[in-house]
Amino acid sequence: MAGFRKFCLSALLPLAFLGVAQAQLINIDAAKKEGKVVLYGTVLPQAMESIYKPFERRYGIRVEYWRASATKVVDRVLTEWRAGRPGFDVVEGNPGLHVVPKREGVFARYVPPSSEKFPEQFRDKEGLMTAWRIIPLSLLYNTDLVRSADRPRSLDDLTDPKWKKKISIPDPGQHTETAQFLWNLRKFKGENWLDFVKALARQEPHLVESFAPVPNLIIRGEAQVGIGYIKYVNQFKGPIGYVLMDRHLADPNTVSLSAKAANPNAAKLYMEYICSIDGQKATAEQGEFVLYPGIYPPIKDAEKVVSSVVFMDRPTPEEFKKLSAEFRQIFFGK
Image 1 (cartoon, rainbow, N blue to C red):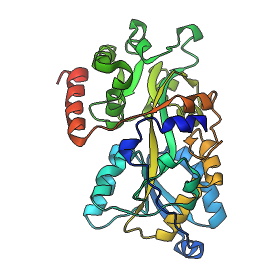
Image 2: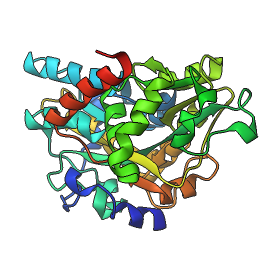
Image 3: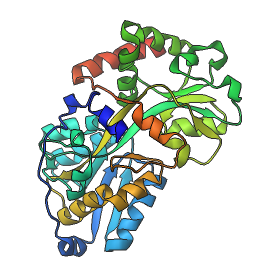
């Protein structure tokens, strides 16, 4: 719990996970009659399947999962909602993904009972978003191609000329999470954060659409190092490792119930399951960093990662727009 106590000193306050919304009971019989739950989210399919399969076996309720980047998830959610034909029961992703849908009334109030076991700092006072895991970022590298002595130890090491054209990152001009990550380097670098971004751009990195493709490029050797989620070292098979740094920027990850869910009881039961000790253990086994006390993923130094987490602030929509334009200029000269 030492790491979680540190969380409350970080940047969660703007996310409003500070209330004590009351948990609600679930009608399991009604959930079983509905027979399925439709989930839109950002977790890799191979990892998510291992998380929800035990739920399906226990309750006989099918999970239909559609996965995409956070940007594409929110686009689909809003398109369906505005057309009056929402196909989702539950939405999973970072808090930023939920901002506009929440504003438009997409989500219903629901607090899974098991989430009351989580540190209080993660509770949404409105009961519209339930945090269930955190996602720390770090440097990833190919363990076959990068010798131990050559491995980067910090983000600054990426600016070494030896890594030119050997780095992979998501395109910060298009990918909001990467824009957020780079912007939050202000916490460590102060006013010099943009100098680092410019130096990184001069390295001519391989730019991809989101964090998910980064480990594939590293494993195939198309890039040797990159910026990505620590969980990927457990979720991807191949020669990939991560760098334990002094501090790791991270986001909490939340789930929300659709206000027009076709399967509301099954959706509530699913949300309760992933917050329960069994669901949190199944989630952690996939390399995820969860919120249930004392549960860690099978990743070396996971407890040290948790104790070093610094949560990211989130830019306003206006700031995101400005950042995207600035990053396009820096990385593409346009």
